[in-house]
Length: 227
Ligand code: CA
Image 1 (cartoon, rainbow, N blue to C red):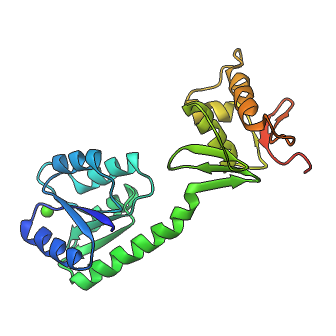
Image 2 (cartoon, rainbow, N blue to C red; image 1 turned 180 degrees about the vertical axis):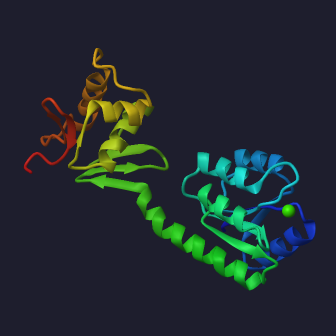
């Protein structure tokens, strides 16, 4: 069952949406304001968010930004009042996927929700990154090679994910430092090389073909050895 988080302070509206969605087989949790919504995010996973723009304690746009900071994939539908064009633009910029102008027909809300969930389901296949026999699950943050789990530290995982997102492309040490450690690269240290070597040992031991190659003077590349 898809779980939907609805953040709306007008109880008539939230009751109406909840009733309709529950009849369609969705689970619905309601927050009356931004503070309550933030508590809900911490406690549960949702498949979709419906956020009203005008909330008593904060803007739905800021709330949208907050959701996006922790979940880049979950669909977000904003509810705006008529003529709040400015809010629509802000909402979309803050990471909302769609918006609906109040008042609306329930059938339209339902159609939008179904479209967003469908789109997200298609994307959900993308939580697996593969390269040859190497497989990463970006949700559980786990890696496998030829079906065998590889135990990685958080940084090793992030490093490997970066390689899998950029196959057959040379990644400079500067770029790796920025992406994985979010720091500028200090040429006086070799920590990138140290980490790449840790990762190589884990990913390549027990296997003949090497995947992470050094490109002298430039950085590293994930590629099949014979190419
Ligand atoms: Ca409102």
